Amino acid sequence: MREAFIHTKDLCYAYTDENGTRQPVLRGITLDIARGEYVAVLGHNGSGKSTFAKLLNMIIEPESGELVVAGKNLTSEELTEEDFYALRREVGMVFQNPDNQLVATIVEEDVAFGPENLGVPPKEIRARVDAALATVGMTEYARHEPHRLSGGQKQRVAIAGILVMEPTCIILDEATAMLDPAGRKEVIETVEALNREKGITVISITHHMNEAARAERVIVIDDGVVIMDGTPREVFSEPKKLMLAGLDVPQCTSLVHALRAEGVALDGDPVTAEECAELICRALEV
Image 1 (cartoon, one colour):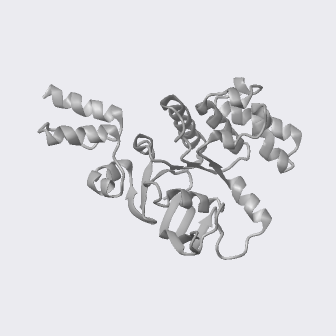
Image 2: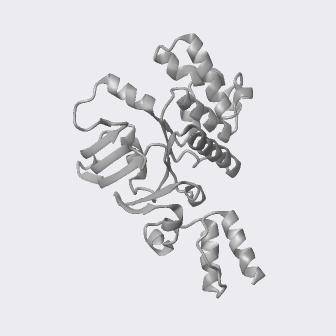
Image 3: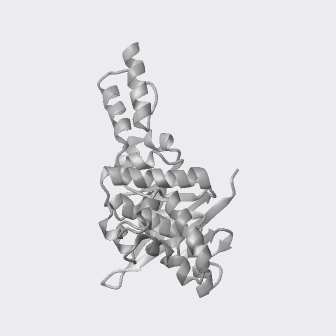
């Protein structure tokens, strides 16, 4: 069993609205995420999934409960500025709009921004930037202007800007929401390779079911609590429960359920297009 990289127990968060009323967002999240795991977190708008992501990086601080990241309990003591720096080197975050993350006029300068501000020696920065750009397949764009890149390319540069800090975990907070299908494919394939080849823990906050189907584990948050937690196959085999939470299932899963409703005998619960095609082909051969 892999060690827990993230541990939460009864994690709660609320904000104060314009009338001064406390509005609960998270209502006691208890779960462990293993080091090297690839997890998709689903939930409708307002479910609390993005709030959960921001807590893991301490962009916001929990109201109560326990949060342990990389062995450090972030809720048992007052954190210093150095503690926050250490956490954000360990846990990098990629946001929805890549334009909000790009700070320089040249790609390689943008990627170098983080380590430069930490005082990393120039020779090491050069090596880190080259390695990060190579990892996300953007070496040939090192001297390009970020604003001239496609959405998917910009997001890959944003990921390189996280990788250069040498994190052990990357959180994508709706990082593909503003991208076209080609851009989404670029980004998802990049983070899958990072997870598979470098063992980086990936937590993807998303509302794209087809993306979630590619993860190792799916967590569903509804009204601030975890209502489902399992493999994609386990979670997507319960479409009615997902619909009650304001969610859908991957298109291939939906197609199989629709065909079954019309009397077509299909055995299994596919979560990818390839599995769906194989299932239908087998049924046609009978």
